Length: 161
Image (cartoon, rainbow, N blue to C red; front, side):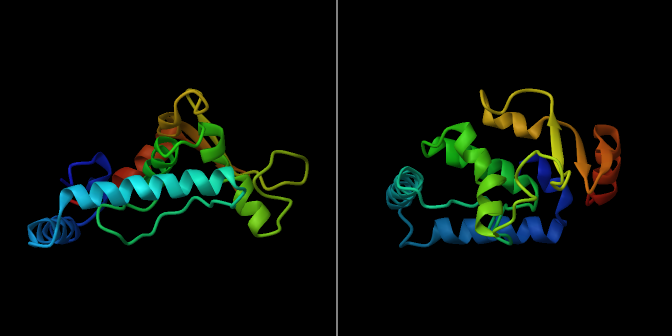
């Protein structure tokens, strides 16, 4: 619990609070693991039904939930969507094309002349394994290239001791 690599970006106090909150929930006499598992299964069925019926799903974390580190949580959500039955392609659209449609923006979520140049360069294909979104080689943000080395250096500055 709380051992994910991205926890190094959260303060010790935050991590402790998250661990205590989860322990408190699980120690509550009304907490039933089987009921939680049923809820998760129903939630996954609902997500898949929404996808199959044209509901515009949007990627986004509900931060600040426990163990939900901004940025990193999106990778977990993509995996969750695929585990719910979406294809990796459909899951990726929830963070690219679908928000653009929702916002009525033709200059985001697409690669075409005149569109905003916010792109992520990955080392492997997320269409074959959604976890490939975590293997980032670099990011083009607002027309500026951020290399893997630069991103790692900046993340190092954010680590909490």
